[in-house]
Amino acid sequence: MKMLSLFELSEAHKIARPIYAPDQSILLNRGASVKLAYKNRLEAFGILSVYVEDEFLGTIEDIDPVSDVVRQGATRIVQKAFDLAAAKKPLNIDELVRVANQITDDLLANRGCMVQFTDIRSSGAYRYAHSVNVCILATLTAIGLGYDMLRVKQVAIGSLLHDIGYALTDNPLDHPMEGFNLLRRYPMVHTLSAAIAVQHHERIDGAGFPRNLKGDAVHEYAQICALADMYDHLTNAEDGEHVLPHYALEKIMSEYNGYDQKIITAFVRNIAPYPVGTSVRLNDGQEGKVIAVPKGLPLRPVVKLFETSELIHLLDHSTLFVTEVIEKIPVAK
Image (cartoon, rainbow, N blue to C red):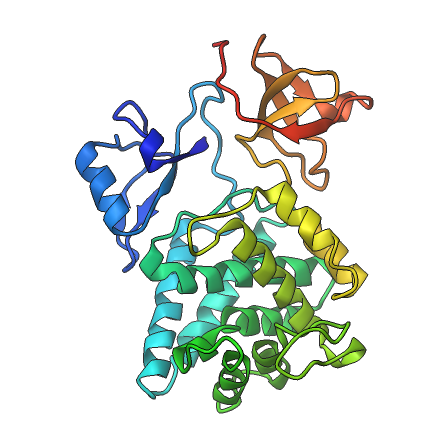
């Protein structure tokens, strides 16, 4: 599969992953053709790019570590929580804990599966989908750090609700404390989980906010969430602008002054810098598309060459490596 902008789509393209409206109902299912009326409707919802099937790659197994059912259900529950908070009503904590646990269960069931997709989000559901993605990325990192199940679930619920303060204020500087004060009302949310809300913009070098904390005063949970938040904003920007995963990972890896190195290392291990469908150039000049990423070895993908359709397993070629991401139209069938 590959991602295309609406402007590149034609009726010849087939949808590769379901597309959801802001209420999480399905707008277009897998296999649907993209007619003009559909394109107009997608644009109206603020969806400016979609995943389509790629004949050159053939059928690629959906390798998202969290199922669409769990992801979309979680997005609905998070949206409900934001609506309740904005209306000054009690949060749906039982539901939120349940979906955080479902996300954790999916990630454990697919242990070793790497994050390879950029979300397709409607503008109306951006913050809720962002919260779910941050939860997924943070929980993966907690698992990678070897946390026990109690701590993993504390990270999951805290990361899922890290931005809940935005339901009470539009001020970026105020939302961490607003979120913390709200979550502290609920005994089911551990104090350290609530601390994620107030600390996820802090940095160990003291350059963060709202309290300019330094060093160990910034809890590990908050640092985990901060990296997940940064990565998701870079690769799924609300204004539609985004950077490719390998650039986002370079940014994350450069943040050694702001976050503990062991947390940075654990985070980047879960992200494929060259996801399936990425066009790449190898150091010998050959070009192709990534069709698979080995578990635990994201820098050694399987590449299908454009000129010959040969499959190059970089694990079997110690002198070959990816030098850059390119845009290329395949010529071989």
